[in-house]
Length: 469
Image (cartoon, rainbow, N blue to C red; front, side, top):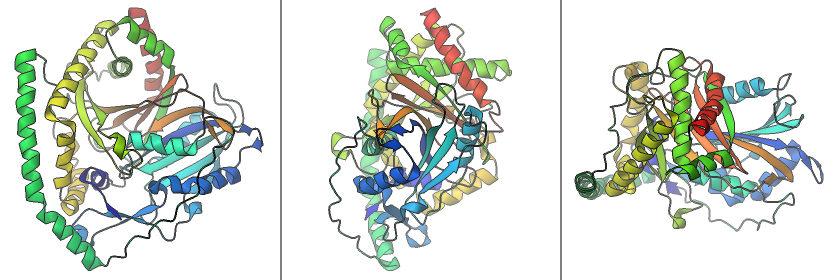
């Protein structure tokens, strides 16, 4: 039995019917294997043999009565894999448009909370998707953000996929101790003991914050490194309004070698170049509709604080930094220079304050009141009544650069999808795999009805940046 952290629980607070809080994506797979075509039965057998490799697969939520504390993860004694694994056929003609619509619909649906919070949809009939063999398969995965972050999600992926067509031998499940059965009274007692520790923990966190602010001020005063954008200083845009349940999803798959070649030509990181590509596409997309603000857009960039000793654990181990995307600058090369400068400065100030110090504040959010507050925020359309905390999220998770296989079938591409919520109507999860970098884009249909136009601009933005460099 493990209690959710404040950060994990925050994704439960934020969840509403219009804002499901699961992450995942689309795995596009060539179904041909050395032992015949991949089908649902073979995938099911593989999952059953490896389900024990991550507790995320078999643990469900148990809530504290009256929501007086954060929920717990417990082993699901009635676990049934067939509640998590389903099959469907892509409508004809089985192209990118039909796949986009299916992914968008799936990511607009809430998951039932009486089971482990993940689902996998086996999609056949990818017959006319460009660059993909006819008859390919897509796996649409959804895992609640309360259970994993991008890094732990990547670790779960590595548990299911193999580096060769021949599946690895996985040690059978070791006997697990069953979770202690706690009554509602026991859960309330546990939560009460936790509440008694809050004042001491809050004092410690505030002390670390003061030290961090002093360090950050010294960075600015001595090294003249400008601080990152402050929350609520981002410009108003069409992206920062209440969201509906109607999702929009699309993606662009780019050459990682081209991105690395740009990085080698300038003083920048791969992530800086990726941010610049996203910034160029955003600038063009907003400008062509007359919605480009004079001030630069601000991206929230998650930063993993997961230590080596925390690999394989459930939950979120992330902090975040804010980065200006210099969308007010027309020249792509100058935009990249400013993004690199801003991202470097944000990292220095972020390290000075302390990544874990920032994430520690989530543990002090009152669980019951937070859920009510999130619903009230949605009902009153409060997202339209204040400046955005930031304009969008861009999260980059490096993946393996060798081909992977599931039950002997080769993974062609892995593309991310992630949640949006009121006031933050665009998220760009980025994943690199086998020489390719996939930028997924999740939004609301009312905000980005032509999201495929935006993802097309990502490729154009790479071309423009190459030419400028």
